[in-house]
Image (tube, rainbow, N blue to C red):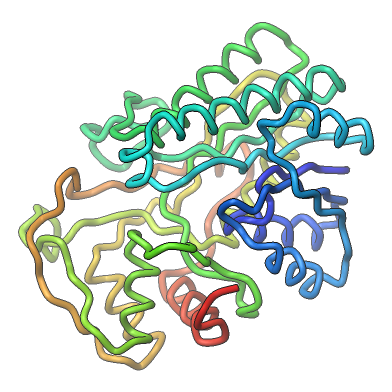
Length: 334
């Protein structure tokens, strides 16, 4: 099977490239490298020993995308391309709506023109209304709290309507919780490009630099008073896309799937996990709550287990160990 990965040079995309190549797939990557690095693609080839085409293309460019589809016979597409920083989306909402929606629409139109109807979409758990109690399954109320999340929500709606209008389409909407970690080799991993806002890279950087990290609130109604989230190893997440590709080959319509462990880890759980993985004592200070944070947010991933035959297998220790390994081997990232 020949698979196009839009945004395939990004954090999740690059790890999915490795899993696909190791599973015997043929791949082509299209990425504009606006928030990713060509070096990641070189390292994927280094890891797998399998060269593959990489095209520097803006997925919003219909002409460039048409030319790509004319050059290769694709069987399916995994759509990762898009802007992805929640905080930045609040500051630049028009840019996020323009880029993310335009990419999704241009891709679907191009696929239809070239007779490709199998699509796996990189969505997010940010499409869920934050008032839902955890664990969160795919049937609870939707409703984002920031422009980034709303773009994912809108694209899901577009793709559902598309699949309902034409039975040839089969689309898997993959709702990620909190991807962390890196490939166990330490060759590829997460390079945020800007100062990270997410806990794991913040905490890894703090441990590496031997400085304290701020913990936003210790008075939430959780076991230790800190916020609880569902963290999933990026390699488990990548393998979920392989299962999704098999699913869209065998089904029609559009279906959403949570990709998470189904386990909630607190902020202090993560800091202790990093301490155990690194041998560096956790160093943190309690700071005021951060606006918009909720106490507990984790997945019910039963649907993915039942329909895709997928489950997360890596532990919090694996996540912390592999994130640290990448940081030590790549202090400045790519």
